[in-house]
Each structure stands twice: as structure tokens, then as C-alpha cells.
Amino acid sequence: MMFGTFFNMVLRAMLIIVLLLTGCEKKRGILIGDVAPQISGTDMQDRSVTHDTIKGKITVVYFWTNSCCGDSLKLLEPLYRRNKDKGLIVLAINEMDSKKDIESYAITNRLTFTMLRDEGARLFKKFSVFGFPTVFILDRNGTVREKILGDIQTNKLEKLVERQFDIQREIDAQYEKIRSR
Image 1 (cartoon, rainbow, N blue to C red):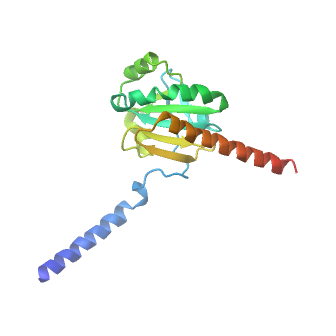
Image 2: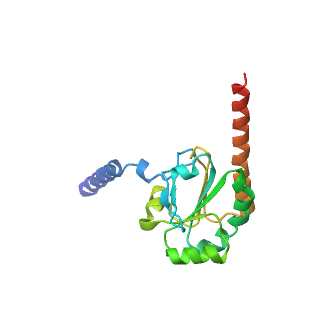
Image 3: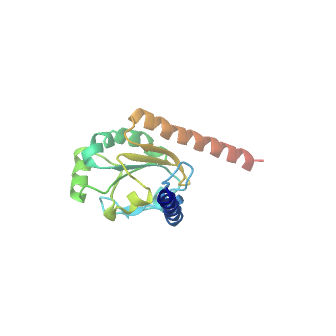
């Protein structure tokens, strides 16, 4: 009986130590309302893509791999084309496929939005991506407004993007109203 009590105390103490050393915050991932991690990389045309590239734009950050999400990814092209002049950026980030395979996929499917190869999975780690696809919608200030784990129908994604444009128009109108006083 005494051994069991001692064992439980040791087990509890070890659990408390593990929780204190690892911390809860490090494992929580990116949440809606968080400022998105800094984005940096090189697109398929060897152009630099940074946080400044997306600043002031509504951004869809789409983590994908060809083996699971290729069919879904190509459906983003019409959404992008309809909204790019309104300030939409789509960043398709792939860590698992080769640059050659990503380029081939983009050419075959006539994709014109930005595609990044995430060397060393830096962005995957920063955004705490654990499955594919994972989609984030960022507002013009780089704040995460939507986080989608898994596949999403294109029309639903478009509604979420439109909602961000509507919110931004409302904010701009309120700002102009206050400024004109």
C-alpha cells in the first residue's frame, strides 16, 4: 500500500515537472486573432516573398502537398483571379514535394498565384501545421482571421475571403467618416 502511494506521488511530481518545463503556450499553435508568423521564402520564379509582400492585402496561406491536396489547390485559381485586383494574395506553401514537381504542377494547372517551396519546413513549424491542407486567412494587418484544418469547399472559402473584404470595406468607411469630421 505504501509503495503505491509513493509511486503515485512520484508520478504526479514528474508530470508537474514535465508541464513546467515544456510549457503549455509552446504547443498551442496559431489561433484566430493571433498575428501570423513572419513569412519569408522564395517563389518558383526565385522572387523573394516576405511579410512585406503581403502587407496590406487579404492573404490565403494554403499549406499543401501534391499527394493529398493537389486537386483542391487548383480550385483556388478562379478565386484568386476574381479577387486579385481587390487585393487578394494566395500563398501555396509546400514542403514535401520537390521544386521541380511543384513547378510542373503549377504549369500543368495554369496556376498564377504564388507558390513557395518551404525548405527545411520553417514555415510549417512557425504556423504549427500538422496536417494537409491547412489554410489560414490573414487580414490586411497580418492577423489570422480564419484557420481551416483539412479540406474546404471552394465556395465556402470564397465566402470567408469575401467576409474579410466586407469587414475591411466597413473599417475603411468608418475611418473615412471619422477622418472627415
